[in-house]
Image 1 (cartoon, rainbow, N blue to C red):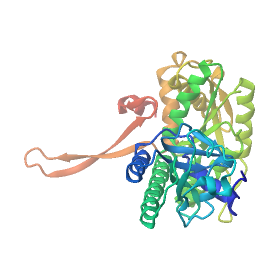
Image 2: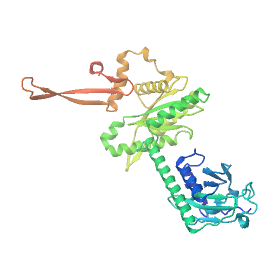
Image 3: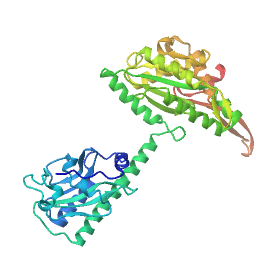
Image 4: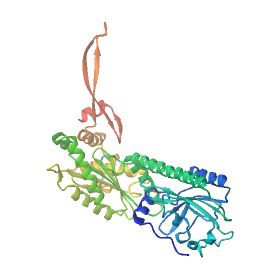
Length: 401
């Protein structure tokens, strides 16, 4: 049987198909209702929602066909997508030279009737068809073509809904400023990486803090600061391996999960390259902005057996890098254990970071005169909630400050 020609825009069509991320997905009751309706309405044994991939047709929904996919050269749907504005009808396959020698036409029982309505993407490209098949030749009128075309349009609508839902899900896991994965995506990936580490595929965690970022905002404004963060995000992504996972964790803090292989030597090399790359001047609106970064590193299983332990080890290493002068890497091996530090020193480390990141919050405590309830003044209070050690009372951190 001669294979169907490829559409003129085949590379673009395949790119569109893959953008929907529908191939090889689990059954979906919404699509299955369309094929069930087709079988019931047309009284046929087979109805399919078929997507035409580069070398195969794959069935998203399948009623009556004992196959999950077929080679593209056997796909009658590959012919149907060549005319995306029409319903292709073959009333008797045995009399059509296009399907002479077709494996499905000679299957037991054979395919003798085929009608397929193209399923179109929003840009008009045909992704596949909703088709019906019978083992006997049959006539197919205009009303049948219209009904089948309407079912295919419903399938197209479901495809767009699927695409929109994916976009919403992606947005929920992506930082809108840098377009890097956000903290939620990072935590999920770190959990998976820790599971892989126990299976013999080690990982490492880098926490990266931009040194002195607040003065950039103060001196040049938030718009300039946002552009600096965007460029840092792009540099960070280009400085790591394709297998590694970067994220913006909030403010001017970034994280990278180094995937297997992730030895002490590799982590050190990647971190030092990051420090060098991110310290190059950043050009924003004709101005050069110079920042540096500090990096804390922890290795899975070596510095912790859970995601929380590895994260805590990397955070302590980052605090030590900043305490020791910034613009440097500290690996968790080099950190003095927390139990060996005085409480004063531990609070001092966290407080220094909180001050730099403007994490201390001002609250006004009103004073009222007891006899008549008249407002007489306010007391300025400082409140501090640390993401790593929780709420810290003023009686603890004021003496340290």
